[in-house]
Image 1 (tube, rainbow, N blue to C red):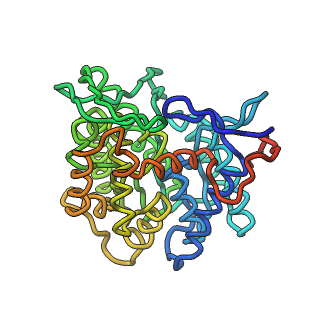
Image 2 (cartoon, rainbow, N blue to C red):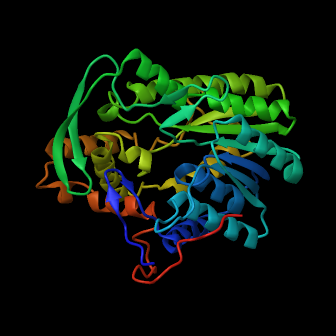
Length: 393
């Protein structure tokens, strides 16, 4: 079939297998252009099929020579529907890793469930013995609790007061005002249950109890803080409460793992275009302004550059890991530089529908969004007839 992008809201309902493979290979090529890293050798990536999780898996395999097990929840092709982008990404990564002589196996299922945790533990026992890096990079709108059976859904809302600000329809380029309503106490609780640290803690408990977590192991989860501009909707909103819980979990895990020479961190990363960030009001307009400023200053990084920097210049330098006063690794320091944020705020005050293309990198945002699904990749013939049925494993 000839596959074209079909965009509905903040998702694309199609994905291109050749384009996704090209996107994965582009990230591999970047990693292979960088110096090798004396890092992990047996890595588990929970949330491994897109964004920062995929980039971490690529960096671990091709910068550190790590064998990897990934966990994701993706759909294969069926009838006249393509597979999800994460499915194609995973297939492409596994093929490239194996060609490079690296072990790569992926468990496709509900990472929140006890059954998937046990399947992963069995794989580690069989193929690795133990893992020395555990990355927690899940992004899900809902979670079914494995013990109580309760299903939680997360919300993107403020806390306390409504918040009104500018936003943009990425696809039409129309700049408007949006008002985000405050969450109820139940919605706050549910968002923490989905996006907080409980499941990360459950994973680490299960790995330790099973004896498949190596002494000296590192675990890291990903977070975001952002600027004052997005604080009400992000850091001071429901998502921020969940991230607070995630960061508190990191401190508890670090205290526990330290007795075995291990360590736990939250890495605060920069804003990038993901399916998740596209869904948050205000954020796409902010990112479009940010990208223009950071590209002009030569500071822009995508997921793969950030994750290489995390491994090479933070976690595996051979010395102490630099952290802020709350124990967090900060990879967002370039985004939050005073000159960068001043330029973003200047653009924010001026931006309208009419001058959007001049003041922002909305074109780059749209391109990055489509590249998430394998479109807009150089060298790919999007008029060609391709087979959407691609196997993993």
